[in-house]
Image (cartoon, rainbow, N blue to C red):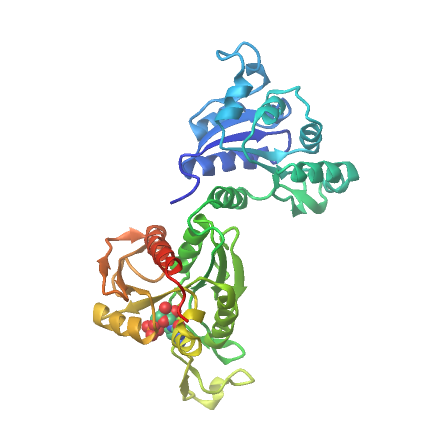
Length: 412
Ligand code: C5P
């Protein structure tokens, strides 16, 4: 389901010190399954060689030297027409000016003129050059003509300045490219709310009760929804994982905060996927000052947390809830029986049950072994999969349910 898989991407590389990051981008795109053809401008070859790109993409990298006398004679037309996307990263002020003008004096400029595919530009230049009215006007014109402009970011520049001008990091550009290809996915125009991570229930200003949830499965679910073109709200307790590009993150700590965030986000959502490990209990009292060891081992009284899914099921009539609600059941024994009870009690469309006592499933690891139990009585035992693959399976099922739900008239 990775939307970059099999796509033909034309990577334009222009003369900036950020060229070294372009090699990383070419490598990441190739690893994501794209066929990457690279065109370097003359200035780019001062910073990096075509060989670098050939080595990471396994395909030819072109320079102006290929413009004349190439087998096909009209190399730029061939490259332009085959491409699903033209990415220029880094895009210098000079290249932006040439693109805005429609210059046709280099292989890259010619190809850009001939290309009809979407284009993504990642500017990189010194701060003053970026803020110059000429560059700003060029960027505005290119954006008006449909180019997607990514960055630049604020940070340390080659000149020693700290200003806006740094090329966006390759991983983030990859995320934008992924989003661009996902736009026509099965969840286009749908809002999906995903929760991830373990809640933190404070004991005092420095301590909390929590669990081993890393958030990895929830983040994979968010990415899989984005890959299908969904608008994703990611309600998370963790800052340790990078936010998938395009997701709207909402950082929370406690179950109570998560409940508020879920209720708010679900007002306009078609799908809720609760992958978070929500604490069932919290300390009844939160000490205002750090608990001192001199006063001896404290007795901590716990009080139940609200069950977010059950609250949602009670508060909102069936036709007013997200059309598809998915829960998770992390169990260490009686997996199927416990999950079945939760499925019904929490009013879910299906539940993802996993045995977290297995070393290759559950917390922190990158693999998971889950069973999907549906409200319709279906039981689907999935083999050991990566968390990404598990997320894709979950989303496939969500798409089917959503299609069925929207095909049916809403309840009165
Ligand atoms: O009851 P248990 O915690 O095992 O249920 C797991 C499912 O219920 C998960 O989807 C979890 O996100 C959700 N949950 C919840 N509110 C709680 C506890 C769990 O929504 N207080």
